[in-house]
Image (cartoon, rainbow, N blue to C red; front, top):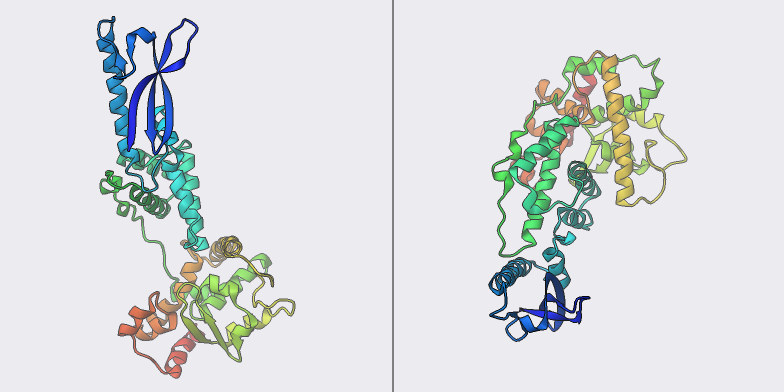
Length: 398
């Protein structure tokens, strides 16, 4: 409960008059805010907190006090809806035209970014979204300012900076999450959802090439890199991905020598925690032996033997996969392959190749692993190892 009363400040001004102020009391805490009004003690009633009748302009001046009080109550009503409560300092900032930074979207972005529940890759996504928004709207940004018109202008800004539909959708998806987080920080206060009139689904874009054809993969495999030794490591990683069941790049980074047991590769996929046992076909085993470095516990020369924090690992993953994707584009050009070739395309070339060679979809699903193992087990059969290996060896026919 906050009480409001208008008073005169004790200290007189140079001409002997006194400043009119608004006094607020909350939980025995007091805040006195000076108003742009002065008068003599004779014209002001301290008990009623208003100008006395009979003096020139008293009605107009009391009306002004009424407007101050109405505005103050509106601000208090808004502040009282906040989950974490508020201080009279918060009130003064808003009353003076200074919005509380704890209500800005930047504040909620930081809360999201610093959440211990986020994975480093997701944390980076929110950090990148905030940086992008700051380039578009450098000053404090508040939930009520994110309107359909704002989103339209932001989309145009992103488009002008070279973002495609996928990039725009990426930023909007994370902005939407933080915006809803800000909405939930207020109880009883309603916001109009700008995404109702501006659906993110409008940014579909043209589907990118998801896998190489058999002919393209043959061209990739046979590419001549004698004049481009700088691309050989990325080429080897791509071929290792193909011959090891479409293994994800982040899992390749973490592969250690103990993951190789005889002619099998055993690892746990980082994304799904699904355990994989893959037969190391001769081309893949040859690549493993090529990069066998006695000075490192890792199979491939991406990481050193050191303890990395999740953030450090994510930073190095991002740096290495960026270079890998750049190299793949150059290799594809040398091989005469058109289209945007990425680690994702190489990974999904494996199941596409098997499907084109009449391998059962169920077998391919088990080879690749499903993002939700609980769902997979509902409809997938368990296949004998020989059935899986026979399908896997189909890649040797390339």
